[in-house]
Image (cartoon, rainbow, N blue to C red):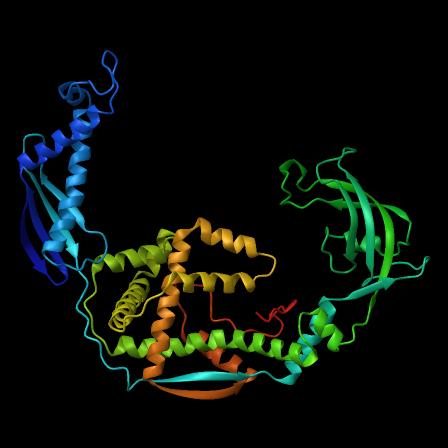
Length: 457
């Protein structure tokens, strides 16, 4: 194999590579000998088919297979020989090839830039600590109480009203016929929430225990059985019980039902959970403040292949007219991401930061605990998508780097309340509109935070 630098401009290098025909023929002979042991053709015993016969029947495909392998092996060897740190997938341009000829091709390579890291010691950033007001904690306690109502039996002849719980069995029919899932036992509905079928709750208002009532309903458009979607249905309901809500007393016993030690512990858990949600948004702002300074204070040549690849990933769900409309901005964002990624990675390597498999597993477990009832779904997602685990590993690695940088810079701590946190997050969103995203840095507005049973783990 002969390797020469054909041209070098900026980060792009073109290598000229020649593999002589004798080497190619030897590889062909090796492959033919391998196939002779495996091929079975009519008129020959397995392992006894002459190589000349194999070549006459499969020669073109064997040559293609051999050339493909030679290209992979020689291009890798050429890159190692020239000590090029590649960025993205090199491009191969075949010049001459064919049986009985030398293989001559060019390898177009984009290399990673040399990065000279500058000191972060003069950087400034603000880190926030959020104080959750008692009013918000008490509102959340009341919300938890409403979400976890306890019910007690109403008197025998008392009618059901909005807010009551009705327990019933049902048998449903469409056009007089039963269907899969047409029967239910011991169904519990809190009237007014409309969680079963649209308009179903209202028809149960006024029912009494032991009453039998027919209800009209329409099955949903997204019913798993397409033939039943939007079908008018008659539900024959036998009312087993009617219950009224008991007023929860928010005390130590209620706290224990919610998974806390006592009421003070429950308040602390609520405060920590809301605070952590605010901090997740505020930490993104601190991180961007640091990244903006890193980007401003470093100058890099960027490989075009990496920029093109990033733009492709960013805009894969956009229509062509949208891509063209935001072309300049998308390129700017892509360059920023590539530049910061290269600098952060260099800093991580310089400081020998690594992410262990155990750290990845721990993060997955953390996500699982944060999604009660969906544990299996989260676990299956990571088991079936190795790329998701790899992406998670990259996120953990980046956070390690940012944490290390924070320890090197002047970090001012600001204690703020939730109103100030809302203002900071809102102003950040107004100033940082990303054309490739619709998701903003979310504030944990008290009306959006949905706390159920709180895990202390």
